[in-house]
Image: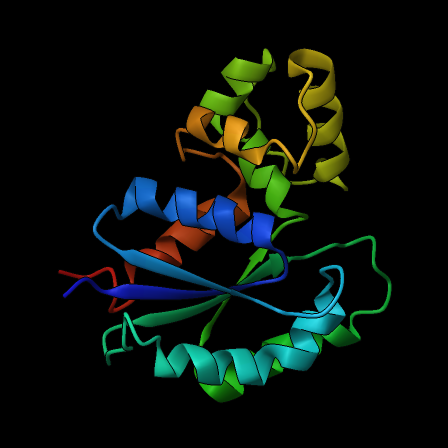
Length: 187
């Protein structure tokens, strides 16, 4: 039976991105994505539903029951421009108390994409870390619109095939290191 990553994210697009990146490094894993429900995605909604989402992940699904070697990951943006860090602290505390792994993308998940060699080449930009850039989602939206006439995240399926999953972003590299230490990725 395939090991499973139960992935809990803020938005559906985040789940698609992370699932794609995981498959590039761990092609034998099964990835099931859970997102918070009810309205437009935001971190507060994720935080308020996190304990229930973790319980759902621990149960698995009818088609794919959870096992003791599965992993539960909560992945979200750091959003350093947000002055109020209460929600971020609450998510970290809930992850710790539930024994699940929290992965934080600095500053946003889009930095992982922009630091990828394949996407950089496709967009005609120099590959860089994007470590200290705020709001890389705005840069990605502008680049996709200007270079490819694509709208982000609506055209995400046109973007994903260009990813090599070799991003230079430090938080992406940290996420890969964390994934490699988890029971679901060990043989």
